[in-house]
Length: 132
Image: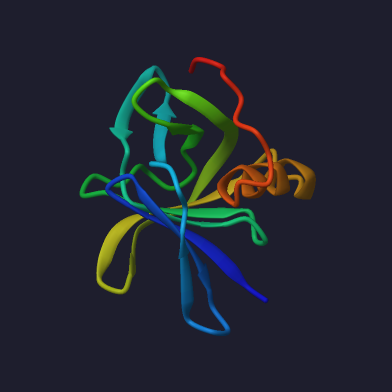
């Protein structure tokens, strides 16, 4: 069963593709994307595929293809860090359902690391209290 995590304005849902059903994540979720020394996108809308190790991030100012980024998935407002992942922009200005943004391939992708993030989102694991 293919599933995704979809976040819009900090409200995340788990989406099950084969049934078109969703399940609300019970806490707000944000993503900060660090590019070089800049953190230009804070809490953008995104779609995360933990199975494929990819993230689509909605933005009006896509980063250039090949850009290296660091992504922090966190719970606001006290910034409880769930996961830090490195990635590379593999498509820039790609449109998904008429939405402009970046498709990022997670570089340090391991099923264990992504499963841990999934476990937090599904509330199968306690949240860590680490500052970003």
